[in-house]
Length: 279
Image (cartoon, rainbow, N blue to C red; front, side):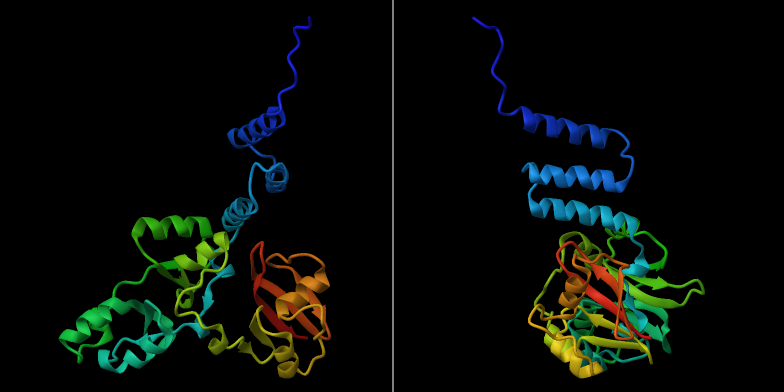
């Protein structure tokens, strides 16, 4: 009678667990090697698709900087520091944000942050107070800060929004903790999101535009007098995926009909934001 034991059905699973354990306990040679093993683990059902997607998002965040995802200064919804509280209720009601940069003169000079909950509480007491009297200090970060470092700082300090400054100390935009988390888990919708009313195009200069990838391709054609619409895709993001034949990553670009499309924001599920330059 043979003393040999039949091969265990759990042996392949055990080998994969051991490989992953060794990978994290050691020093991976590069990010591609790490992702390759994780994706192979998904094929072997050690990870599900959502878990792998979030892990890839975490690794992506560690490589990105604040400038890659910030809301540009021109798109910030701001309030002047000397405005009386009762005068800004229409703006707060329209946009529904919980925090607003407070400016002194122009958007490059952010001097604080107004919280909607502070506005409501203090306005009930005295509507003639000015924004400056109830605003809170702004959390300021440089454009070059890595997103994983920013996320840790925001969590530690209890801040939900940071003002991004350029090398001259002027406000270049803003970033929220939700923006960083969306790079990991994908788009987070809330009751105030209304993409149909926000508009899809933001013009930065005569020849440069920021475009939401969800913009219907027919509307894009109408706006720019192009002829990109087909039955193969419905949006600008779909156009890029179709032409590149893979899910585009941040920084990838495509030139079509004297137009340069550059992916500014994307995750493993879809493209979110595209920069268009008319050549």
